[in-house]
Structure formats: structure tokens, C-alpha cells
Length: 313
Image 1 (cartoon, rainbow, N blue to C red):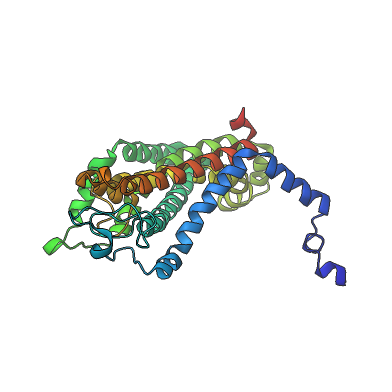
Image 2: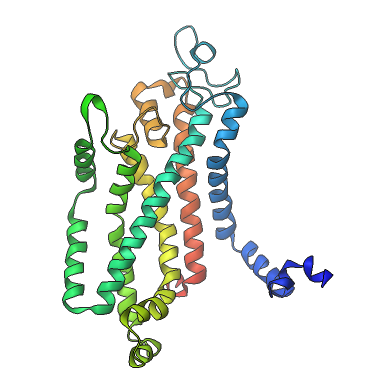
């Protein structure tokens, strides 16, 4: 009994050779290792951003013109406690880049999850019941795909404006809604096609023949079989939605300044042309966005190759 307390793998019923085999299999897959490392780095940056800001004494929106701007009013590249220098307003580029990771994940993860849930419901319903229900839901999906992304985003942002430059709804919620609105259709098509293929399998037909209700068949027989594919596609769609958020912010219809977003930071660096004297103003947010998208893409591809052999072929 004492030995079991100090051997978690035995206590939970996983033999030691199996546990070691899984670890070795993970380490032998460079895609999983590199993707996990990059994604872990981004998640760590988002988590420790407030701690680093408190340690250096620089908030994401605090301005330090006396320490960061030279006599000509140009931002420094480094020094005075600013590792990556400052922007044209005297704000710490490193701290704002770290907080930008929090914004990107705080928008990308909920938007992708909402899109997945909506697409899952639509795809399961249309794929299982077929007929007129499937035709109607397919038309709704086609109509949603017909809306232009940027025009719709601009229209929604315009409708969200209140008096004196205020907003009716939090811009973060608006951006999440816009991205989810244009993402659920891909999940719906994926799930619908998977359900059409699976519902003719013998185990599903046996459950229907045994008198199981449609809800029970969908939840107990079909959903567990398509869940891995949907989760993997969630990881595939997430970096696309992160790019969508950065694009909207870059165009001025996403996160509003002074909230640090990688898109707004890139736009600010280019509009002010200060990246010519302080290149890290542009390199830091652009590099962070690149590494984030690269990490999720590499990880999702590795997961798809591992758990979906047909996709790997």
C-alpha cells in the first residue's frame, strides 16, 4: 500500500512500460514537441504578464516619456529598464506584447469554442435527420458563408458606436461574436459530413433498431466518434481566428486603443513610422503573432496526423 502511494502510474492503473512508451512516442514526434513548446511559451507569456509588469513597475498603458523618449521625442530601443524599448507614447513594448497574448487568447479561444458548439449542433442535427431539415440548415450555412467578413465587421462596429465615441457593447465581446459568426460554418460542414458517414454504421443502426431515441443515438453513439476530429479542427481553427482578431484590430475595427493588441501595435508602428528608429515596436508584436500562429498550426497538424490516419495519408 505504501508503494502505491508513491507510484501514481500504478495507482491509476497505467503500467510503467505503457507510460514510458507514450512519453517516448511524444518525444519522437518533432511536430508535437515543437508545437507544444511554442504554444506553452505563448500561454506562459499570457499568464505571467501581470507578474512581469508588477516586477518592472510598467503597466501596459502607463507612459514614461522622460525615461523612454530622447530629446527629439523619438522612442529608445532599449535601456532604462525597458528591455524591448518603448513606443512613441513611452509605453513598454515588452509588457504590451505580453498583454497582447492575453488579448489574443481571450478572444481566439472563446470565439473558436462558440463556433465549435454552434457548428456541432447544426452539423449533428442536419446530418442525422437529413431531408428538409438538412436542406434548410445547409442553406443557412451557405447564406452565412456568403457574407463578406470585413464589410460585416465594419457594419457591426458602426452599429456598436454610442454617443461621444463610446461603445454600446464591450469591443471584446463584439470581436468574439464577429469571429464566431464566420467560423461556425466550417465546423457545421465538417460535423455534418462526418455524421452522414457514421449514421450508416452497424453500431448506429443497432442502437436505432433497439429503440433508442435520436438524442440518445446522437449523444451516445455518434458524438463520441466524431469528437476527436472536432477537437483537432478546433486547434486548426484557433490560429486562423487569432489572425482574424489581429487583422480587425490592425484595420481599426477590433480592439480599441490603448488596450494592447498585436494588431493595433503593428498598425501604430506603421502609421507613426517610428519603427524606423525603434524597430522592436514592429518586430515584437509581429514576431509574437507569428510564433503563436506557427505553434498552433504545428501542434494541430501533429495531432491530426497522430489521431486521424486518413488525414495523414
